[in-house]
Image (tube, rainbow, N blue to C red; front, side, top):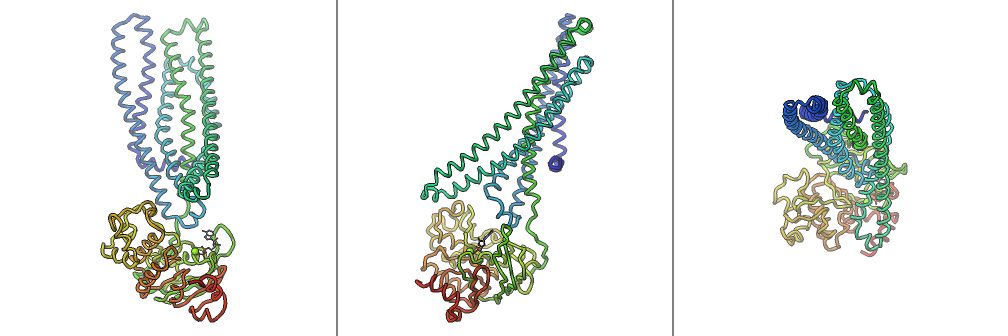
Length: 574
Ligand SMILES: Nc1ncnc2c1ncn2[C@@H]1O[C@H](COP(=O)(O)OP(=O)(O)O)[C@@H](O)[C@H]1O
Ligand SMILES: [Mg+2]
């Protein structure tokens, strides 16, 4: 019920067009009833009474009725579909807007395939329910109502037979719709799994090839595919059972009608026309009644789909209760007794972490993989909140900053480079950087040592790089990400193994360039190469989420502790 009400909230925005649709559909339906009502005079006056002039009149009436019906049908269907499509477009847009505003924790919990399927498949289900099914439902209900009117005005006593159908159909519809909705929910989840499996197979195609995962992937897909098939067939069987039952019930009503109408005392009081009109009206009401149980399936699918979309829409967006905003921060960062764990497990990832990064200095974060470096860096742009302790930027708690303002101070090159299906220039000057000039873009690319390969691309900065930069090498992708971060020119720069895909030569060149740009900013660099660490102002050593050592490279080496061991195993050969 809540879902209906909420969907109605969307529909109400287009009330005028919705009314046009309803009126059009009712005109169509009422004309169909008028048509059948005309049976009575057609038979009684024209054929039994041999009134041929009245026959001409009726022919004229049929012409007029047909034209009115056509207009009503067009306006009705077009109006309803227009409203339905508008509602879907609104719903999709809202869902997409929600996706870009959801916190990182949400994305940890859902697979991207499922989220894409919600936007593509589920909203299409709402669409077909909101357009096609609503038109059919409204029209068929009206047809049945009007036909009932025809029967009642023709002969009320005979029509009472028809009313026997009402409780039977009512019962069917309630029992069946519950079942429909349950199956629909499961079908949607299955469609999510279908996209999920497909997405993995598509993005992982090389791994699948080399590790010969074709058979297991096929089996995985076959399983979800067959489950979906079975669910669809179960839905279809339920639907067919219900429409067959309606057919049977209507057949019984017809039999009853015959039995009553052909009793001797009835026969004398009913004209051929009256009987034909009622009989035809009853027969004519069977297809809409059958369709109505089918529409029920569509509508329930739509409701289930809308429900799953509303569930996402109801997830809280990223919290942004902070109001503090400055044009440019100096870049003093301090972590005080910071502890953190992800929602998915209670295991602490960061444990009582404290250190300070003075403005304009370079801090290298080292530690074994899994020690919590990326997690720590992700706290600064507030990807995750809900940590214990304090993190301050220029002395202000991160949570006090308005989210947009906080992020405007931070440039980040993550472990996984993300590129968009756009040109090289569009990828460097991404998002809020879109207003940067051509020269600035070129300079950032040059500083990131990316200009060399960019110039060799067919259209230079204007070359398209394919989805997620598939046409580039790992090192090239990383250099674009670095260029993007340099162009942002933010006071705080976070480099998370930003040069891991580069060879020593390019890394050294970037290092030189970086040593220029990091002069004026606070840099947190998660390093895996010695050269970066050696030149840092301080090195922080993380081990299982704890800061175990802190100092300069030389001091830590002399200390003969964790860092010295890490240094020998990891960098011994450099
Ligand atoms: N989104 C996540 N949800 C749950 N656990 C995570 C998530 N990301 C990382 N972890 C866990 O947190 C720990 C630290 O990971 P991470 O910060 O990426 O380490 P590092 O960058 O030092 O290699 C790992 O044990 C990892 O399994
Ligand atoms: Mg990491």
